[in-house]
Length: 564
Ligand code: XMP
Image (cartoon, rainbow, N blue to C red; front, top):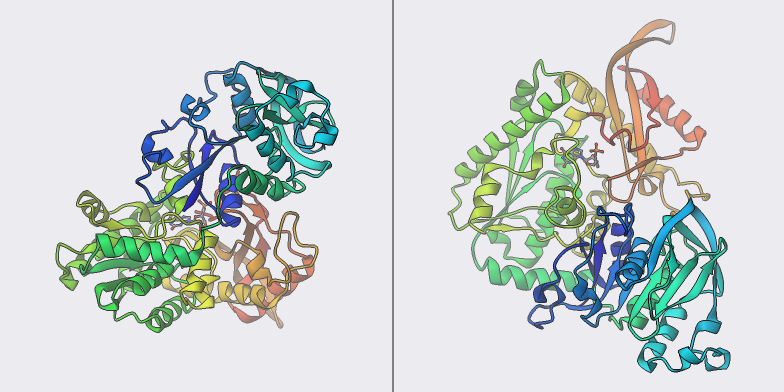
């Protein structure tokens, strides 16, 4: 399969570059910008299944002339693969090739017009005036034409940079200029080096996808072989080789990822081999256990072990108010129950442990994919003694580890996972415990479950306004599908109200709804007021213990998505 490598120099939008390429049907992988480019990575030994067709250099918050600016393996310039530098990526190439990059008098941010100067191109002979260009390498002139075919003569680009190219390196030529007078599109005369000062991966960049396609398909000649059907076949082949007839155990949380991972195991292995374990902690959403059980049984699960452990979790949480203490208690109990129940199953040592790890989880836990994230909250589901032991034995399988969240949803649909499960918003491992501020009790779990269910039901039956948020590409969808994650939070406060003629002293509920690409940053969903008012009324009318509803209007950062 053809592949594009994205070198990550730390820009906020690096992952978006990877997404855009995948959305075109070409597999992409993001690796740290200073990764040594071994034969294995470039697959120049021809042994791996993937063929690298090109390299994209991402943007960065750093400057190329400081020591913080990461330097790529200089092999990129000699390996013969086409390069596309974006923002810092372009500045990096220019700097490494002997050009000059200097600070702008004032940082440029936002929409800025770009004009393409085709006169510089030797691709269109009728316009060619520059003798240097005529003499340039014809292979590259064809590539230049293929690249420039992706550009409108003038368009609005999206910029975010504090530096600019002040002297182009030998061989580089300007093909596009910004309305503010700086080089915006730069191409080498004889080498396959292409550069953009703007960000084509950002939706605000007019024609950005076409520009990226021109590089990926035109310049790199990549073939679109990245489909979910093909992915299933790859997983099947790799599991057949690694797992053979051994049993596989997967711990299901009820979320989309582990459920789709379970479905994928059932689809690619014999159903008798697949053991699925699910703990009902009592901290789940309304009807979660029922929905997951039905979905997995429909997919042919034969060994579905549902562990009822609500009482144990509530007992462990008794008297705890501090968020990290609650998370630790839940994490520890998960491990205790997991060990006890796995031992009870009596599976042989040869058993493999499967996990629903996604590509973005590898980024968040800093396992060498993309940039490293700081630990903001202890995500309990990152490790356990069982996971560690199986990892040491080389018996962990992570069949979703190449996929982004929405690719997992697409995969789930293809292999027949219920729509109700596939479209579900993300849910944290510690469940409602981090959405009940302060001490967790059964009574509070029940109140929150009911209020949350009303909120979600309302979002599912309401259409998103047609003036969808900027950058959204979805049309005519429900509010639920337009929103990335929505939930209710029960606050440890009661407030006075009236119900009929009677004084009511009910709990305060906060609603949270955010839009996000991957949960790493998030914006508040700008609800039409009418929806919020109606939803609030329905909650206070139907969930008798809720007296007041508020809407959380904090973005991430500085807030996190969950409250604890
Ligand atoms: P925060 O609150 O950190 O959440 O902004 C980012 C995303 O992660 C989810 N989340 C968790 N997921 N275990 C999980 O599996 C956890 O401990 C956990 N804590 C937060 C959260 O729902 C959001 O989607």
